[in-house]
Image: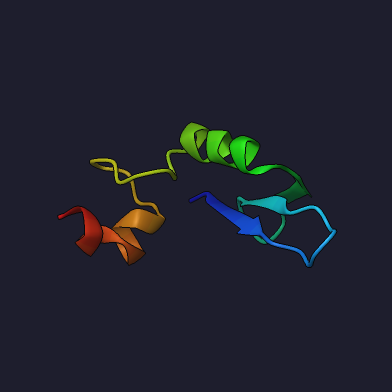
Length: 65
């Protein structure tokens, strides 16, 4: 499973995107809001999808029923 997270830094510091594949394989780099949203779309983390387990299925399902 892939997890895509937004890491918000303090004022004046760039926010980052974290892509977590496993404990041994994860990437983190500075992104703006648009870039982060595009990454979420690529990894199907932007909305619920049939047959795809993502954050929306686990935490936000009630909002889409």
